[in-house]
Length: 427
Image (cartoon, rainbow, N blue to C red; front, side):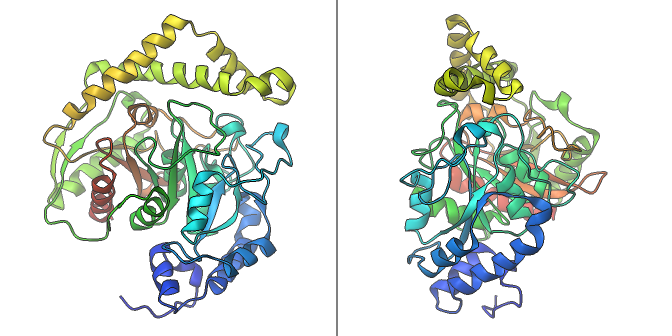
């Protein structure tokens, strides 16, 4: 691969741009200017930012520290605190709030040389009412949520890397809707200190990028873990289980056709492909997940519910009341479902490397009032396992589709590598 600079610097992958910067062939300031030009031309239609200051972004690029992410612009979801920028959590309750310190994910990215280009739009407290962001492929459709601005911003080329968070499907689903790669790591891989936590048992910080290798670079730099090089060719083909999952009834026709098409492509590429479904007991996660998520979120929002209930959306208040209405016995049973299924999941993957399953029920829904159903995500979030969505063509209205690769808890490096293999096989 040549390291000659392209005419459009914003077309560089993060991995290649970082190499060029660290080799002294590209200046962070020049890369930032390319993205600022892209933002000026595309963001008026996409509206990815909750806060953006071009002068601050330029200054940050000029002061970028040495490190694996030196000079790489990063979109930061607005549930992660940032020093010097507002952190408003998608709610008017926190309008203008500016923390003194960076959250751990932001501080770790800065220490690795990354440049926070701006705060990206989130749904209300990363859970309910959508923000202003539009799908970069078709602005009449949702970008998904709750990491709306991060997914749309990467999809529109406004920045090469972005933070998202996932409590149900808020990394994987919007990434799929916007045609980018989304990676939800094993629970706890990236520190959540300084995040506006909603569900302590489920909230997971993830990343989005154009390529699997870029996700590995980013996550590795901020987690301190070796995520490998997904672009390296493996010495064998993977053993893949095709999993419709208990959410299969939610699959739109384009998703049913997609899974058939992907299954055939993986077989042609040499993968050892076989069907593999979750045991019937895993269906209990469909009810356990919202029980725990809403009960924990209602308690996390105790201050807001007490002091500013009128400034919470009606939909969010309803879900929080549902959470508060859960009995001790119901919560105990839901947590027990989490524990038993997590212990049982390794057996599901016996003699397999990964599962391949849908990323979302279908294309991004039309309109901006709903960010789509996380039916194909909540199970995997509950299990605390790593997931990657890669672009997998388009649906009947020309909007992106994604396919999701799921692996064992803690086996993130392998999941990323096999996700790259799947991406190449279905291209």
